[in-house]
Length: 132
Image (cartoon, rainbow, N blue to C red; front, side, top):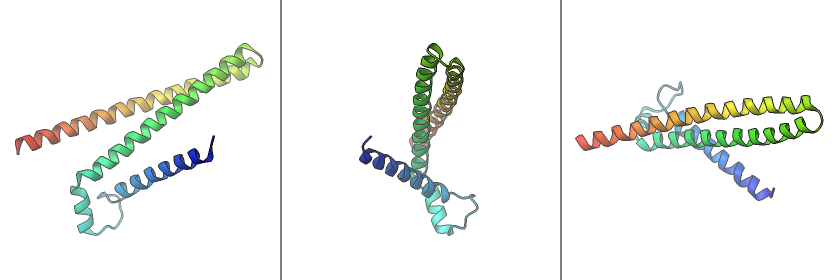
């Protein structure tokens, strides 16, 4: 794999972590001392909430893709080893693949829950703007 792709992936991950940290650390109730003007201004901005939600969705999508890729590799390796030589190793890899698949299923479930919450919030916002 070329180094440029790895560096670009690392920069994207670090930028996502930075945005998550910036938008999440200034929420009221985190225990940090934030000037009141800054906290109230950020609390009223819907963009901070949108950035947090987008970052959460991105992390869940990345986790689902990662667990699915790991599960696919483990199923392939486990099936091959079960058929060919050390069957105990193939069975162990297949068990780990089932664990990875269940982790991916849990991430998909939480991702769908986040999408539903986001949809409800947007509908509530549209209703509020329609009524005012």
